[in-house]
Image (cartoon, rainbow over all chains, first blue to last red; front, side, top):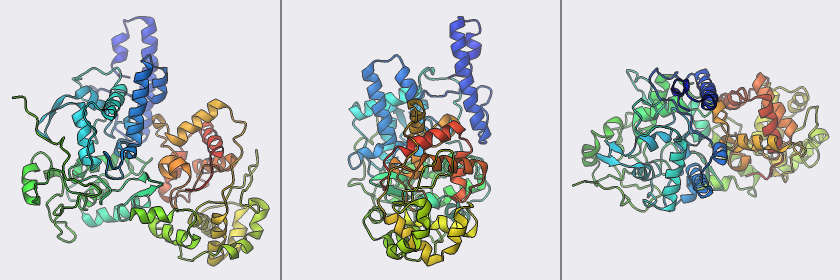
Length: 337
Length: 224
């Protein structure tokens, strides 16, 4: 569970320490698996948490109704397409980006949000709670309309986040191991041509050379990497460093850490140089939108810039993808005046 | 684009479109030879000794199981035959037969088997519940503590296949699935793109391979 646990219980009850040792062994095996794949070992002061699984949920001492709601949250997380055309307007599932059902380090493990929020968020410059953070994913990554705060769907998703955070201290003071999509060091030069070649060679077998991904029977097998059915221009993954971190640590599926840093960054640069649905923060003018969002966000993306290959100004369009509106009404400033 | 692709995976459309469409989608460098299932039926007579007239193959406990071909994706079958022929997939039984087929006959045979109704898998009938539970977990959710991604994440909804590259494995014979996973683990099969299957198989225990094979064998084989 938590690595420092062992030390904490050395002087504790015997029963407790046996339990902690078993947990510690599980954690060590997990870390060994990750190390064998080339993931870095945790730093001395980092908080390591291996989230519980659905099997653990069955064994947990929780109210049956809570278990039902957590299972529902897991189901929504891994099959978010069941909310298609209501809350989701592209081909994404939550688990398309948060691999291993949201449990994996280096794949933006979602339990971290449950223990660090409410917190100030630079992207919208106010304090966000967990529901608002989840709403952000629906607004941008799912190119959609978030479920209402406090709705069944929102409570189920929140409960699943909290369940995965079981046992972790709120507002932990240690840095979290594998939080987010930690990017490799940025190489000196990024190349569209190299990125394209690497995408075709390493990614297109699943995502298609045109980035459309693959759907079968209205289910997403491989998500779209750009285009109408992908995340919109406001999603975190359009930031090149975030995409590079995702790719390096998670792709190709089953082969994390197999691409070199240059490849991961070039592919990220190439992906961020493709079109996708408009940013919900769009004012009607791409340069004005860029000005308003540059510092907190788009300075890391290609939005509003000329594409290296053909000079096309990225994001200069009114295309909303599969969505009949630009901006869900949940995207608004919050004040505490 | 999406609608087009969905249509291309519908079972009933002519095999020729299926083959061409999926080959084009997957970016494979398959020769664009249209298969004719009637000619394929004639050419497949020699295959029937093992793969059976209905394409159901045979699960042979302790022996070399012969895979079900009925209802598999035509482009996938064609690719395997080409690989046997070129030696990028090796099997002592298959090599001489694949070598007898020319490009056209490969496409024909593939179209023929792809057009046959899928038959059920066997070999999972007597598996115990804990083995089946483990197999179900691996097939549908994976085991990320071992970094084993689920079968379904590439083989598609209900593991019934995704395009020309990722074959349907639900309802395939347990003996065949297990043997293939072992072959990938040992490196004696490596004709998968980018080592996608090999890298996962190498992280699976013998028990994992058995578990997933028996569970998949018990599933509905109807192709997507």
